[in-house]
Image (tube, rainbow, N blue to C red; front, side, top):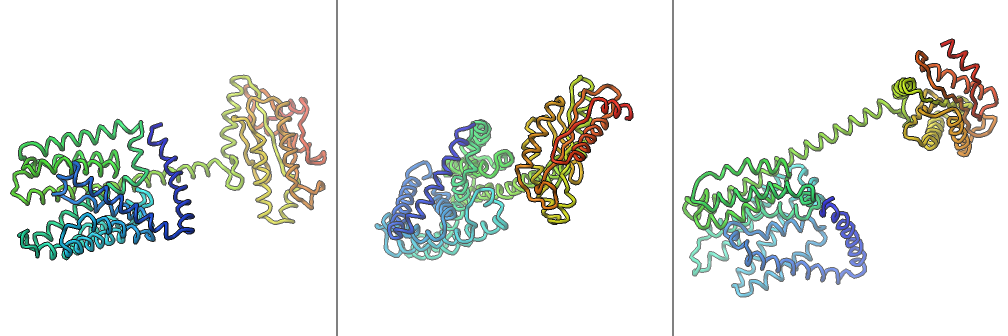
Length: 506
């Protein structure tokens, strides 16, 4: 078992405990809870902001703004009642980070970031598991229309107005709007899926020990090919990566393909900015735009493929479960859950031939509920069904050997096949069974015993070649008849002479 598989139950347990305690603590101290959420949200946002502009992601800032996607993912994972506190923490930190900027730029950046974040988070379904999120109806359409297109397009307007007024920048309104739109759109398209998969426990099965070599091998190979392609002289062959990505999506699902695209975006940004790779021959700034389009198409392609794979898996699982249910219905009694007559006949025939071949005994019990017709007439058929289920449960618990087969023979009659058991063993189990049913103390006003009881006929024999299997059932049925004549609620068998008589007759 891999490390990720071992850790996941512990993480889920801790998460559940934290949620319960936070909910309880929040009810008692709502003000302190609000302050805590504001502080934590602001701290996380500030750290993420600094990491984004000071690590290997700084080359990506010319291609996209990664934080917006992560912010939306965290909001999807958080109940909406906490969104105002989270927004407050992020706004405070953002204002502090941009305090050297003009006031109108600070206001435009803050308002646009918050509006874009809320538009994306509001129109996407909440995150309660990756598979469930991916299969939400209309997810891809909602993802493209609101977070990826309308959100950046709307919120880019006030930012473009504020920055285009700065004469020192010499940037037109539409140029800055286009920069904001493309950067935030690609940031959402690329980094929102990564945030979603990192916040879903299903992703970490890719890194279990048994899956780790395949995961590293596929994503590593894709990364090496991508690095070589985007850090070599300009050659328009970016399409060669698509079959690799398609193969990863099939083998590793949405999580693996999204990680592969993110790694590619990191590796391709620097090469494209240095005029290398498939888009290096395109004049600036259109080379970055071409890379953005390529990465967006690559990520969006993963959605329908993953949805189709999940639907295929669901269909296979439902088909398998339906087959198992049908198979169970074909060999099980619908009322009691024991084997049905068809299943009994098949197994009985196999065990009989084996007993003849190996010279081993085979035992059987015939069980009949005493005065069951009177019980049905007096208490009704529903009570009769419940009575049969209770008796079936007692039979099931009394027959403990793996090779024994309890079955419903028909109506209120049951049978237990006991391969490899002599008559003494059959009688012993039958008496235990009779006593357990008696202990149930099921009321039966029309029975002479005033409770539900059973009569049991038993027999065991070492079958000889040429002897019919029906002879064993007939002898056990004679024992059952003897138990009925003897006053019911008893176990009975017949003599050896009667066995020979029945054997000759058959």
